[in-house]
Length: 262
Image: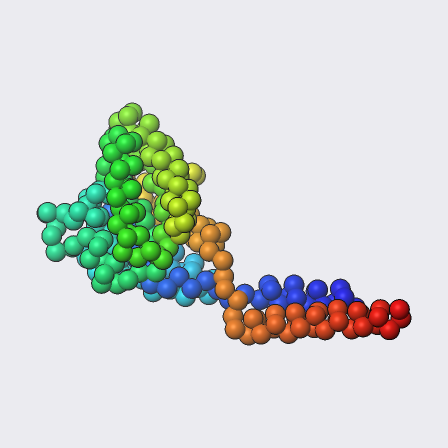
């Protein structure tokens, strides 16, 4: 009989709800905007593809942002921006503000971050400093914010140094994502670089084509699925309570029978 109760508990534990991502802000440069995606029927780039995947999973989310370029899906992608622009702002685009303004305005629960492509060939120490400042800014304003941090897609810039810089940057992002998580911050690494083929997945030197945007969406989706545990629905918690009660009662009955036999 005991096995039945264990089986019941296991079945109830598997009945979990979908993930609640809350307000999701996509942050980055023109790749976040969806640059060149309009040529392939994807004017919003990876954002619309990822949204469809999350919806199919039953996840709850709302994209937020000021939507400067393509307003169908809200975002904070800014063409030509580097990492430092995200927290310093950009003098050539002052109305866009910076991440401090965006967090104060929208209070995002989840940030999907992919930034750094526009800073090609800057040294590792500089990039580490910029990312550190960005994350300290984010978590200084929203300590409970979840950041899904994506590595950068490979570029096809005709510069052999860039082909060395891309792997260096993605090793840095991977390492720093682990360091941020070790500090107790909710940071999830999304590996875009691995499996991204600049020969087949780019429209130009930097902007993805339909295949590239699909790979970015898949990478974000895989990171979300692997890194965020679903929360059981209230009915499931009630079921778990019943299951635990049944097990407890069964154990008591067994104990009482053993005492009577003794």
